[in-house]
Image (cartoon, rainbow, N blue to C red; front, side):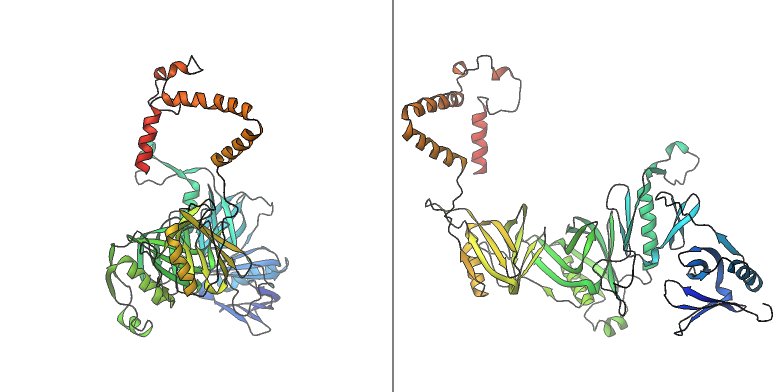
Length: 537
């Protein structure tokens, strides 16, 4: 071995690559070369630690460099250990440390953070490790749970990679119960030591590792405590050259600008707030819930004074002076302007439509959720929850219903259903009757087919149904019906008159009940209900 001045091992894999190559331990460093001229070289002065351990493809030599990068070479045989150990000791004065892995199959243990790697140990033996530098985010999907995301399921595969040919870890969730002692500066006073949830300590540690590994460049600008309606919460928005980060108390996301496909800036009908909507593809995930749109809300009169962390040369060359060094304007204008410049996406604003009261949107409900429907120039958008985007090109016909009633009266609200060309229907209800004419004119101007359905199947209330049954029974058995109607109406009249002596329940004394709240059987309830009704009217 001393004559050759190097030690070779054949049929060795580098990392997860399927190619086999030659692994060489030489005085000037460690190298690996495959038949397709793929090479990996680590200089001897950069070596920090070498470990021998069992792997899926035989045995593995794990090399840790001084800059905390990890190189893995596997495919060794058990008989290769002594030869590799002697070569490492001779050339680098380092030990090739054997390490046993936990193969019990237990899913509980302890975690250890080494650099940017998370190591999961069972019985003081490593079971697996996760490179947090490759993670894209972390969140808390439930109590005592911490999830680490590595791949967005909707993100396209890199160029030249067929997703059907490779397996990849998408996310992993840890259950961290119990509490741990909070680190305190005053260690002498043990009585004041506070207990904090262990899952929060683990979550903050993982998040700090992600921030350290991802923050290779300084952010351009930060917007603090921005109110997000969907998903609900307040987030800090850190904007970088190629991506942005949403940092909340529970969730932390990294969003590439290339995943932003739409931007909307919409004034609420109250004219006091402005909503900024971001369309994403692939959508944002919180556990199993997907959010294709983010809805932020700003106070219209609120202003902000910020300075971008960009020099004049970058502003002129990269952004073609679309951005300014400093902004002093309403917050929603600054945010939308910076988003438009960094994402190269157009910001859509309301068009020519005006509601009966002059607003850009009309109030309605989608199933059980109240919100606002914005008729734009090429689409409809319902916000805030669930955000629903309806392009004109996908609408087959729009049907109006409950516009009037067959009894000759008129309804205060009406419904509007979009029959999409794809076969699904989207319905909005509880729309003010005054909005019907403006909406119908708008749809006809956009050349969208409109159909109005008369209420032939009118909704009958319980009172109307009861009256119809009484009329039918009165015609069939007038004597029997009259006596039953008399028995049913007399107690009601007695209660409404407040005459307690005529009540069939002689033991009942509402004045002695001691209740401060008027009940429906209390003689004072009538006045209170009448007052409330007059106020509501």
